[in-house]
Image: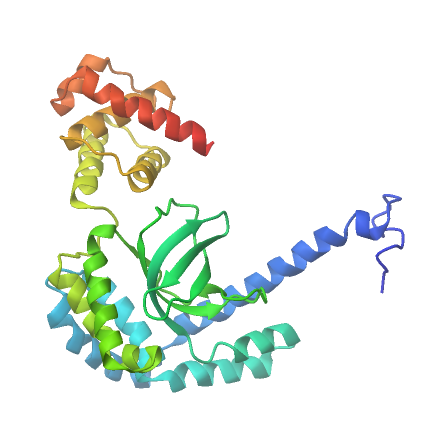
Length: 327
């Protein structure tokens, strides 16, 4: 085994600790993370098995009448699936882990799988966002978690979060990842989380007992308070829809451009009297930064969205600043 003070095997002439040791650690960590992802992907690709499908679909049929008036079928099935695996039939998940451990050679992976037997039911609030993790505090027991980010899409502070969580293998306290469904909710849905939290406190049950008996209550409350599975507020949705309609009409096709505008809406939450003012500002921002080939005068853009040049310029400038901050 090469020592940290030995010459590096790559032939650089440097000591191993000053050369490839860090690179090897990164590679080892990447392999470990890939192994974690593969375990989770294997589970959701193979379960529920055919013999369990009928039982799962009975749960979906129980939940659907209370949720499908607002939530699309795929979302209902996704949240019901985690309910089925982690509350109704945890034996399926635990048996899968046991089988996987028998096939696993890496000791660190075996220890991690042992810690996965009972995923953590989590609802909470985003307090801080970093490059690889965001910090969220549980509304139910006050525990602070560092949750792995699944993408670099903007996460505004104050957003509510739902997930089932697992230790992420970093051996850092309360560093976790979402098993499958990681859902963010705009602040306007905070009342639903408060209602669920108040019901939990009144129950005198543990978090796990209450979640197992009352998981559906959370989603019923969200639907009753207007949640429709959307990522944006109705106003923000209107901005995106207006922008996409304009792009289709003008033959513009650039998803990266749309993502920049969506991140701006989520992170900066701009206020405007008319959604068209923000959409128009976005179009000018896009053409000024060569994000699409088509060119329009400020007057033409304003007329397309029925807003004045001064209105759209405010959001063009805000988007420009936001874009530069992100680059």
